[in-house]
Length: 332
Image (cartoon, rainbow, N blue to C red; front, top):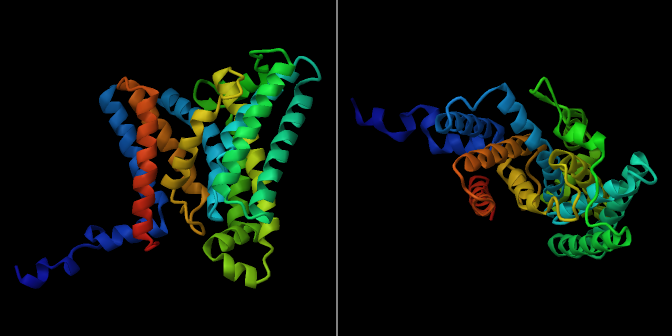
């Protein structure tokens, strides 16, 4: 065999580092699917017989609220921002509906909760888009405001807990034949809307433009402040919908219910290929990222690891994947 035949240039394309880097850059969903399959196989190896149609349905059911919450992070991260208020907003909406369901009624409670979420998003958008407050600071501050107001609401209602509406429990936790989650009725339209918005509309192109090159977008006549206000309102409303599903899935209404899902929502978006620097990414990868995190959580539970270990793992994954993605895409 000649020297030329053993050089890296003559190796099959799939064995070259450049080919893998290009795959992660152009089609991140492909390696993500491979990782998901490996995790499923690993789950079966660790606990033989666990992988079944029912298990797959349970994984999808658990991943759906996280995927919706991660949609908030995906859309805001595309502009170079982030929304740290989604956990507080989601918790608040589920709790508000639970406190109103036996009084004004379920649909009034849903309307009030989503209106409150939209107001929180509007304030976030004004702070980020008009007053140029950094998204991390603005949304973190708003999360504390929402949590405080939710606690005030709890005291005003003289309740330490509340009942989750039957509709939320049925949609959030119910499954058809133990396989197909009812929550797909909510998730499919939401996911389709996000995907179409990002990939097929002018507004989606504006989000990418602002994140990729805000100066060029401004010179092109884009009114970034208007785009950002709408963006954070959308993010808050999506968080509110996720809060309904979390409440139904866990059968719990609490002002801190979804706080623990904040870090996984960021991790799902980052793992899915959305750049924290803005301008690159998409929601398809985020959905797979949410599934990956859900299977990992199930795997860690099978091994007996506590929630603290999961949080450490998810945080490490954000750092590692973000660094790897920045290297692959030549971002500084």
